[in-house]
Image (cartoon, rainbow, N blue to C red; front, side, top):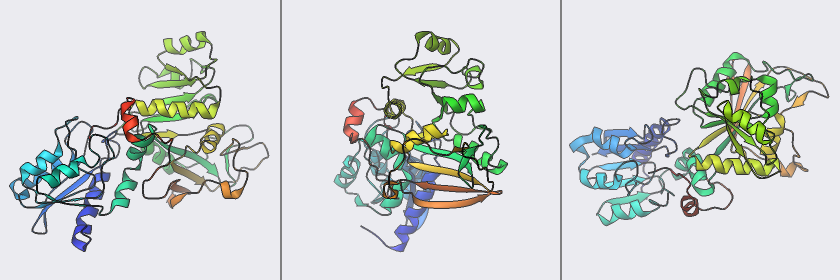
Length: 392
């Protein structure tokens, strides 16, 4: 495997290009590509939109005839099957690429080492593994959904310095400042779904939309075991404009379900009486619908269920310079929680940023190499069970 500074520089560039597809490429992976000849960049591209040309095709188009005899750097194994687009392996061979440097193999069952094998069989020199950890980190959500059938779960909340998300009366608007709230809208704009509990929907009466709109329109999900969300809530009133999914329990009354259905909501009745198990069932349903990123905005009971079920993949915390106090003020995370500090959920790659007067803290719950520990369902099984994995 090549590891010289030149190759590192070109692969680093490909990774930066790949990140530009965030919010538009999903449920496909984020992929970037650089084509060089005689040590000079002659073409580059990224996977810009799902269903459109892959990164390799965009880079080869820009390179044109100069690609012949050149080196191609790509952050994920080129596809070798007909999906939404033709095989990229064929395009590499037709362009006359002599060497392909690939960050990581693609776990998608119809690719998974087969693209690499096809390139090698055609006489192209293939090197795999350059900046693989960075590539896995970038595509951890894609990898998780293939491996487990579940989307990548983002947990978000705003709280005071003493850990409160609302006062003793339940008042919470606004703990964080306008700059933080602007960041939240940006975050919402690249999500496939936004999840809140029924109590948050009742107390805050939120819209849960991105303002201004982002590249994705998130389905708004309410965890409401009895399907009792009020018809006059903003969510129900706008259900015909932006999708609303009410995740109900097995004992929700049929008339309650019908009431929300008639108003334009989708009601999904999950069969477990246990809230944590219902979350797991919900993640599987959202994964089957090709959702990659899901943002959970609380409240405390929902966030507690997330923590207790070890469902959090990524954390977005907005910390405001305020003290709320009060025994009855609401803390950020409820649920059962850890019995010992050693059982607390650790965060990796933790960073912070000043947003106005607030601090934005961000991290992941798995190490930075993109490896996930899910339900144990492998990628092949996920595909065979109808998971709409990305058509690489």
